Length: 184
Image (cartoon, rainbow, N blue to C red; front, side, top):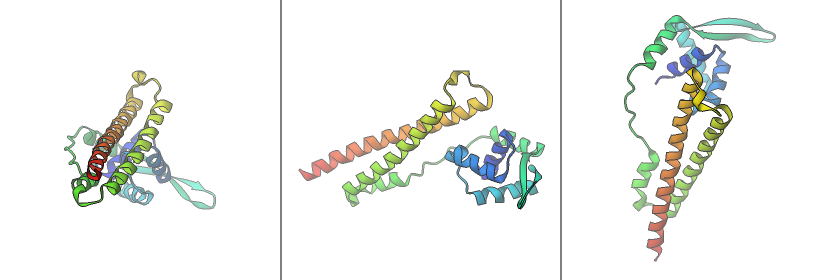
């Protein structure tokens, strides 16, 4: 996926300024596709040059005009084509997994500590996501349209984080058994 698609999806959901899109990335989309505010503004400029978005300038007192972007018909067509195009399988690239392969060459106590830190970070993300689920989607069986789609993405994030926490628990337990055996 390109950042262009993430921004077009954001604008298809609701028009907004570059700042507002950045806020949406900070609150939701960014958990699944990250971008800096600078990248967002640069991409908006390109999308405008390509005719995929338009903007309305809104005058502001003492500041530059605010640009409120909307998706053009051509932009909506790009989103529709992209949404239905095949998604290639993403290769698993996990730095932590490769480091685990090298565990025999390192200090197991340090590696276990690193895994615990990763587990804690993923548990925090899982807690955040489940909090979103509780707060924003109390009755998921009634959802349709955009809300259902947002919920399903969130569920994917919850399942992914839970799986990672479970894997870390498994690895930590196995390495602690190995460390205990080495000490005997």
